[in-house]
Image (tube, rainbow, N blue to C red):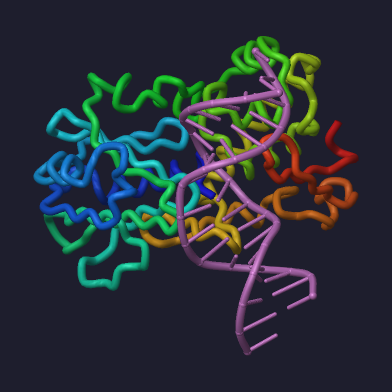
Length: 280
DNA sequence: AAACAAACCTGTGCGC
DNA sequence: TGCGCACAGGTTTGTT
């Protein structure tokens, strides 16, 4: 599912192929995708506008517009942003279409089978009211940078299970289930270790793992799993899944030590995979 | 403060 | 082969 590396890959696609192109016409199919505001608000807010940048905060995509408003897109679990030729057939569950100016004739398509995703047009000056969750986001390890000292502060300031802490967007923004498991494996730490129990060397490993895993995943264009349909704006999948060392590898040998990878459902009902030998 | 559950959806993959 | 059902997951909200 789209987490920081996947969303960052989409952001780069928007930067290259969406920013600077006037939105000539807007179609909103399913109202649920624009439930935050309304069909009319999104059509009015985007028609004639041009995105001046493509930004990312955690898993949120934000495009400031030349009108002064901003467009927010969240992919949630099954959302996709595709930029495709106007003449090409649209996928099922295409809920929002932005016809782009210039050539070639292309349109931005928001596709989302499970309809958890959102497209919002809001006024940045009023973000505290219209997009309150943005203000609650914690540090983005890539966009903001995350120092070892900051990680030390985060883990010492609370007594939480590490996986729950990594998944908490108000602590660190952008990590989801896949990268939480991969980061913890790389750091050789169990998901249920309490944050305030980490020794200095373990904090160092956690800090390093967060940056290393996320950067490698971005480099690989994210993870495309067999059951998910994550693709970038050009419709291409990522390939970081071939580098997963524990996620979705239940019963297979740990690539570090050979011990069978364990799978269990932990807090928040999230499936979790880890190596019982490498991770302590 | 932290853990836990439920809710929102629908395509997929499994067991029978 | 066909059917039904558990499952997947990001985030918010409410409860323990």
